Figure 1: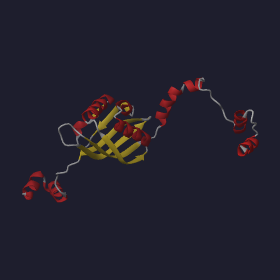
Figure 2 (figure 1 turned 90 degrees about the vertical axis):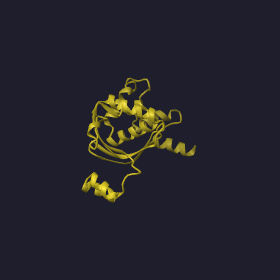
Figure 3 (figure 1 turned 45 degrees about the vertical axis):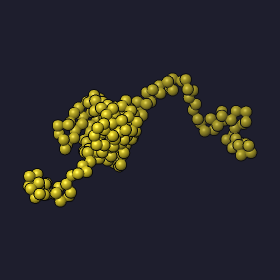
Figure 4 (figure 1 turned 60 degrees about the vertical axis):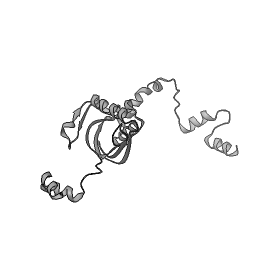
Amino acid sequence: MGENRALLARTGSTLENPLESARMHWNLVWVPLNSASHRRGSRSGHDARMKAKPAEIIERLHLAMNRHDLKAFLDCFDPSYRSEQPVHPNRGFGGREQVEKNWSALFEGIPDFHAELLSTATEGDTSWSEWHWTGTRANEAPLEMRGVTLFVVENGRIVSGRLYMEEVEEAGGDIDQTVRRLTEGTESAQRSHR
């Protein structure tokens, strides 16, 4: 209590009304919870999202993936989102509706889907993220995917993405076979492997 009295004395406060004295000393502004500015709080969530940095959006995306929270996941994407997978050009699409279709199927079909965010870097409005996705599929080998996504974030939402996600290939060729296939073509590499 002696320390509190010393603090109160330094701030010019009295024991009768220490909050008012502290408010005056520190020039605090009190906003009642039922005030008009507090009621506009629903807008503050929108404002916070608009100011969110790309890394913050990627972390929200990551959390939504692991919670299987489709609504929170979709909230990370702009309605006019554009997706491309440069290694698989036919998989490109536009619109958040397709994101919803894809990820609702993933969450339903892989009930223990888990995303590990291994690394992330941001340059301007683009976030580069390295992922490891795992889960159990019905009547099939477990899901294991690794790769990188590049997401462009504007106004707190992902507006475009380039995905380089691939299923892990445990039984694939070693490095020598792969280089031979790349340099000689598929048929030559298969003949020299026999």
